[in-house]
Length: 252
Image (cartoon, rainbow, N blue to C red; front, side, top):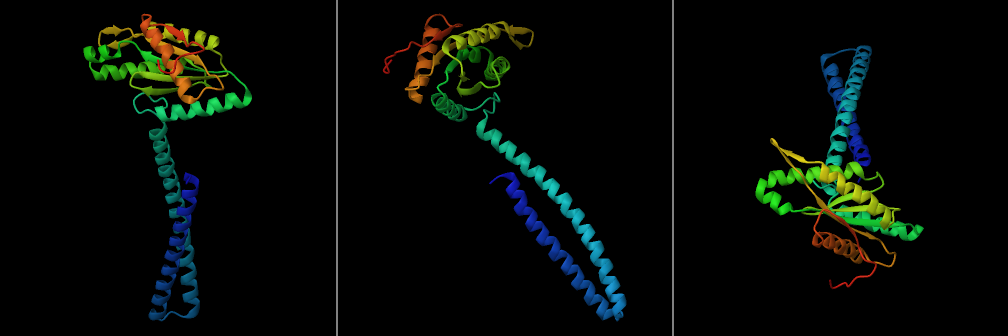
């Protein structure tokens, strides 16, 4: 249920409450006027004044409550959506959202016969960073890398934290050659942007594996191809970008 629908339902409940409140005030006032012995004109005038004042007050209260309620509900939904779709540490999409976006982009690329590439990016020697500087510094490195990726890719591209120190990057309408150019630029940029740790500057490198999506490949095959390219980048000395071979052994 959307926030707008929830607000509408709650507004109806508030309006019912306000109407009952006004009627209750009218009933109580009428009883008081009758028992106090006021004549009919005085009673009608008193009830009219009380009704008008009560209506104005309740409308003001209702409007204030509605505005506050809308803010609270919208904030709650935004926070919930953030927790549902975004990685809490790095503020990029989480793994589930990244996979779902990849499925969507694969379907779109197949439907429109467009190029689509994906990449797996892994932070080099991340375990050593954690062991040497501690997990708080490791978290800062993850945040730093996520920020560099977001700043250098296009708005149409997608980045998600795939797991640990790995990021999935989706590049719609991009073949493997142009993906290589973009991601090589990203790799070089990251290598030149150190993370400050006190008075020390820690330089980080990443390894990246790329594959251009084949319309006949499954989701698993696509991710595995990018992983194979990433492993090749690691085996070849790290801090490099590799393109996956067109054909691969699924048991590798």
